[in-house]
Image 1 (tube, rainbow over the protein chains, first blue to last red):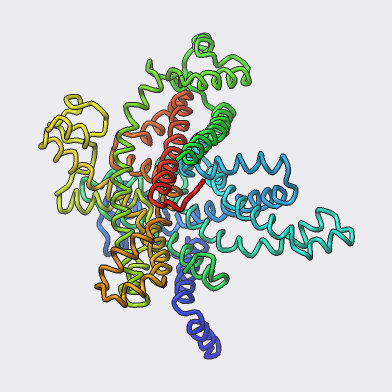
Image 2: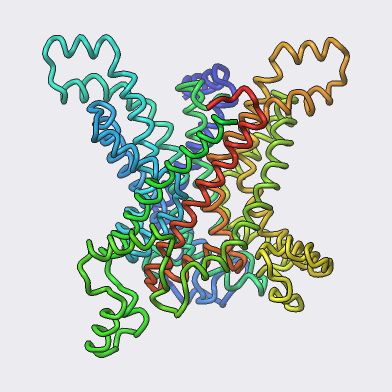
Length: 286
Length: 338
């Protein structure tokens, strides 16, 4: 145990502030993942239970974060809501990274007409406000966990595409790729064994920051009333519901769901920032 | 200057494929997905015959490729068509809402620039001191606050608890927009007719939405300014200025900041898309009658022409704004050649 701690603080001395940013970020993420995994045992009530005490009770006593207009316990809804947002954000980031990396590799490696057309499409999507595109997709796909994941993932494909395509173009010219060609390696082998492993490292940081952004987009869509059916417990939807009680001063209905969205996004951002600094000090320019 | 003109024309030509591609994506997505404007207009219980007739009228019965080509030809003639749900030109609906979004965005970006550039420069000056860490932490945290939640919290604090600022709309009930409608930018309109009590009312309504938007984006600008300032502060001419005995604060905020501002300007062009997305969310929180509200309302009604029109206009606004930033960049920095 002592050895673990000393190696921990040792790394802290080596990398300074960035290491601690990474550790705090990872800690926040772990705490919320624990919340999602063991939600039924952590939450004191069921998130749907409409009989937990008085209506719109302020925080305190039996209800850590108060109750809403349907007498549901806000803390229990927060605990259960972590499942939805984590699942959507992480799945969306995985989906867009798979599509974006694959297209970027092929496009950068093959070049020619395919490369030009794909790049033009990706650049168009990239320059357009992502959220507005996600709104259009979410509205058209209709409510559902899979649908909102698709809508969120669409907007990040160009990010991976541009990063990976650029790297592929550079690595393609390396001597070891030429050597592989000379001994008769197929295009697929070169891509998969020589280029892909060199590209993947740089996408790790982008992936983490991408999840942070996807968290805010997911919550934005559900806050706008798009993307999820009302039967699912979700922070963004709770925030939209709490908005109705803002003029009458029931602050706890908006404060806690919103703070959780920020905290989760902060966790992934801090992890990403820390990783960026430690893996590649030049990437984010200090 | 001749080069600059050529550059502007090239850039303008490049926005055409961008708008075309976005338009095609939205067109296909709108038509492939379930739901259509006729059933959302007439409700689910309308007789089959009436629905068919209405579809015929709106041209929704024709094959998709024909509809698509027809729409493209229409857009080429700079015509966005009529709304399918209301009796209204799409261009008119957009012209009514666009100024509200632009006004909000302009004030938002001003607040962002002011906060971001000043705090970023200050942090760079105090590098590795407490102030630097506090400002950087503020930058990271504020970046992770969703803009709609920031809006709600500001409404709660300043609109409900302290009860000092209005939380919805562009004007109070006593100020009628119709009396000074000229550009649709209310700040400008009220100044033009010299109605200063109305101007005060408009500004008071702008404070919370503009700060919401400005605060959230300020984190990015703090990082950018700080990074650029650190590079500039290492330069030889800064050392030379120190040696000549020019006061430190003057060196930092005048000499260094001026030079650090040029790369910040280029990055600003890239943040316009983020600004528009933030504006859409801010509008819904503050009942601000702009493009975001229009888009959402019409999405629920499946009003295809208006949704497509809004997407085109937003794409054009983003392209134009980044082009303007680039032109300013070329004028400010004479070394830039295209």
